[in-house]
Length: 203
Image (tube, rainbow, N blue to C red; front, side, top):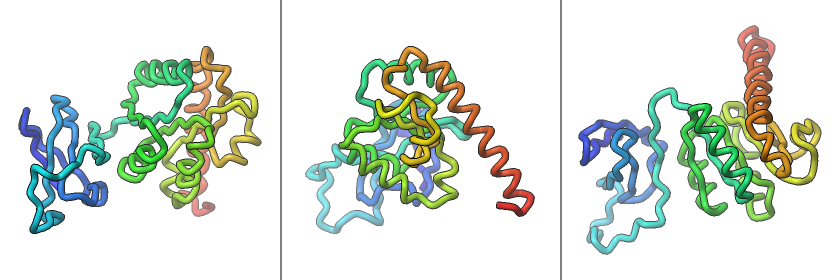
């Protein structure tokens, strides 16, 4: 779907499979940061009156520049949330967040992220379970970092058992930059060899 920003006239393209299944939704222009209200005529009920439709709770598709690296954060613990956000900014990642598990699941279904950081809390287990259902190709493109208190940072066994690429301890927020540099390098190295094996017909 092609969308034109009503504020700066920038033309955006959103894949049809990323559009919410609603007659109206909001999207933020990546250039001027203004919200655009989009109406899908193919989804409009004949009795739809426009003004009476409540779309305030609709999760909007996120639009980022082509080739941008985007991270999704679902972290309650303040020191890690702040440290991760600062590191991501320094590394030139765009960031997205959610305030609850339901919003997180909708965003993960609607958008593509290269890095996902989730705090290991009971209320987020459904989000982690959903990620666990992703097909291999999609899961391979997402570097999943789990934050909790059940093991030391970078513990490979717990990472494997929890279905994450890396496990980091919540007590290590002060080491965020060092740990996240290691997380990125480890992920890139692992998939570099995996992709090489796949290209050679071994995967």
